[in-house]
Length: 127
Image (cartoon, rainbow, N blue to C red; front, top):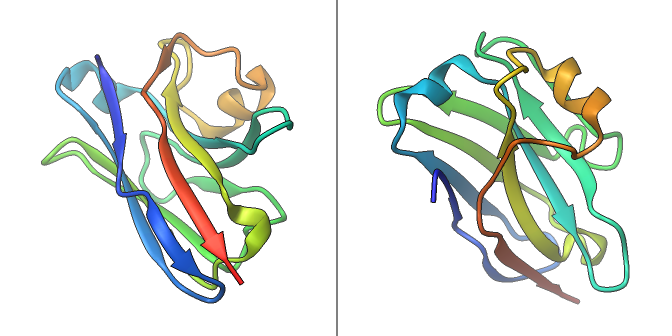
C-alpha cells in the first residue's frame, strides 16, 4: 500500500475531523495529492488537492471555506482538516496521486483516473 488514508470517524453536524494521507515512498513528495469521496449510491467526487508547492491547492465548491488541505513532507503526510461538517459530507474518503501530476489542476483534469489510491477512511455525520 503506497498511500494510506486515516482519521475518519463519526461526528455530529458541525463537528470536525482531520484526515491524514501518509506515504512511505518519498517519491510522492514530487506528486500532487488529492482527496476524493464517495457516498453510497453516488460516484466518487473530487474534494481537494494540493500541489508539490504547498501553497498551491484547490477545493471543490461544496467544501470551500470549511475544509483545509495541507501537506508536510516530513513526515510524508497530506492532511484534510474538515470543519463544520454536514450530513452531505458523509462518505468514504480516499487520497490519490498520479506520477504525471505535480499540480492540483492535473488531478482535477484527470477526474479520478489516477495511478495511486489509498484505502478509504469512513466519515459519518449525524444530525
